Image (cartoon, rainbow, N blue to C red):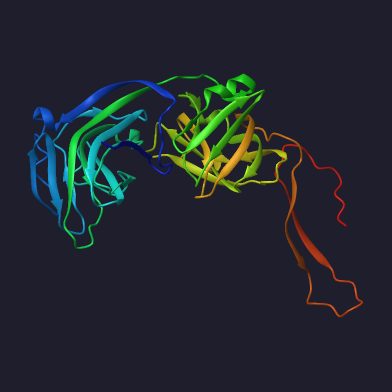
Length: 347
């Protein structure tokens, strides 16, 4: 029997969570053991919802099919994951909703997306909700795909909420051997050799993920990344903080020219760079392949690296001149590096 594990996270999807070892179960419903209490009520656009042969079964017959958990209580944190084992013949976008204590209904801001696999085989899904801002979570809602007018079935063996126990670090700067603390997660690969960490991702999947952190956001507003990029021109830096739900992110452009450069990413310009930063991520911002060799990562208040000069825009300052006459030009020149450029000569 085919069985596959699917991972997802808010904003950064398909996270394999390889950097976590131990886990503990906070809430669990095993339908083979009669754990169906409450799941048979409040189903929406589903019929024939029942527990049979050790699974929660039903048929999706509307545009917004979902099932809802009974009431429970979990103290919310960044390190939690919702895991469920299911199969369906309706593949596509799914969502996990959660309700904080006191909430009457689910809201879009309390949700994380993932992808259903519609091959009729069993798969284990692990969704990172990053719901820490909820404080206490008291109910889940599992949304299926829209069956487009055709009744499609689903089966679920078990659902649980787990607490991940990460390796923690008190660092805010990583270079050389310290880079081994960063792990690649699903859809990505990482190899440490010499003093560099080579990171690869296909089709924009996965990320490079830090260990658990206790970094005060006020200690630095720049994420300085020294790396040599071979593929992928748009990246993102992402983070989770104790004071806001979700995984926050800032996109930045790189030069995929195979030359070592330092990229100073202004994370502090985002309103959600505050409180204690619990985890950092670095990876592709679009569905393209990326490959880079990382030499250092630093949370800092000072721009890093040598001068990095680029011409942002070059325009004529007046209307088009006739042939043979001087054409005055205006240049917008930017230095994104950490050092003064000195005199600049344009030819």
